[in-house]
Length: 306
Ligand code: CP
Image (cartoon, rainbow, N blue to C red; front, side, top):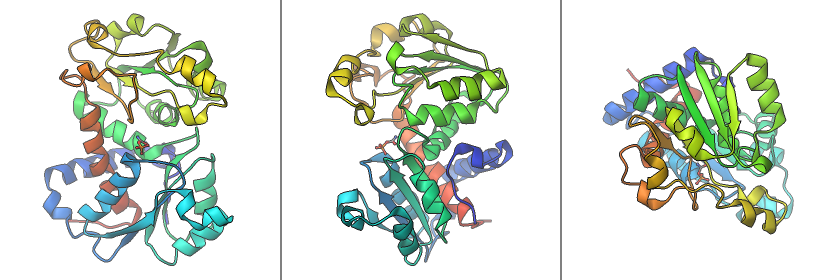
């Protein structure tokens, strides 16, 4: 039995196979419409979500399966003090696979150690968000036709943004990747990723504060919101929250074939005036998230469709 805790749980070859499957699902959805008949997905969300929870549910429904779950800790027995390990033992009696989001780093890992069904990490604190990374990889591959040999600008809250942490871990395995890390001083990428991942693997990167300086050199601009829920005080969040606002004026500095991604939700960091720019790809990214989660569910349940 396999779980998904980190994008590194799949080799590059396995990721390629998974992304190929997602592309086949996009091209031939009817072929997969009954693949999970009789199977149940449980979504265990201890933190708010729109896309991750509902796209897992849409994915299972598109595959002909059924869904169950809770969307906040308050509406589960966690509110009465139940542990993650007891919850997952219980859910293992009801469902065939589950996706868990939790504010504590490592909680889905604890779950998978006590689970008899595959567990998908749907975001754990400021740590990892591997299914967002699968979505990002599929989006980049579809837009650019490759995953290597490109300059990726990561902009915003690089300290707490788990989507950025997972994406870096996944992309450093491809040839010719270079990062521009665009953040305020206080929200720089954590040391353990800069040193243990980028420096150790000899990945070229630059840290800059001004988004304008980076724009002309980018193949992909990955915007992120400032993660309000991870701040210790409101005052710091308010000071940081509008540090970057991508608007039409800044988009003029970017190459014609640069794409803007964002895991969403967006707050103010991308002005709505950018949405009509053909390079704004964040809502296409949302759609890819469903195909890739369909591919993931099939892979973890070891279901093959001819
Ligand atoms: N991208 C993402 O994780 O969005 P949600 O918080 O809405 O699930």
